[in-house]
Length: 172
Image (tube, rainbow, N blue to C red):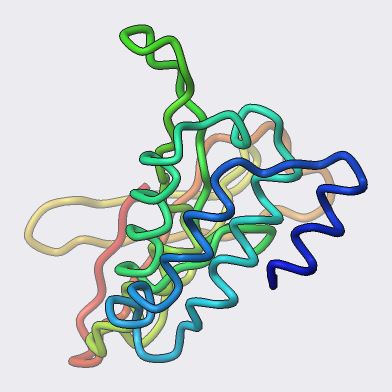
């Protein structure tokens, strides 16, 4: 978002106090961001997130700068994709909000694929009427047969990660 666009937004009554600092950080963000990440896009996404949430918009500029830096280093974008969540937390010492970053499960999956070691990640829900057994020990195994129709209440979920070397890992 350019300074001209920012002025237009301010005319509409929306002010994002941290935006001028984020705008100035663009060149620096380009140097730390992952290869395919655009600093300009990241600053724009932060502007959108801050303008949508009053508490985020009240976060200290320092914490917003720290959060955008973390996103650039992780190579993950905030927003509806669920890669990263921006969380406003009340700091009682300074009596202001600080922004923290929480990596979503989609962000974790993205980062796992980037290692080049993961072939697939699959996740499944288990319901009370499903036939489900899990064996732990030296030969771990999950056996899951879904019931048909009403499967009952949710019991939990499990994920299976298949590595490039063919080994599999799971957790319930």
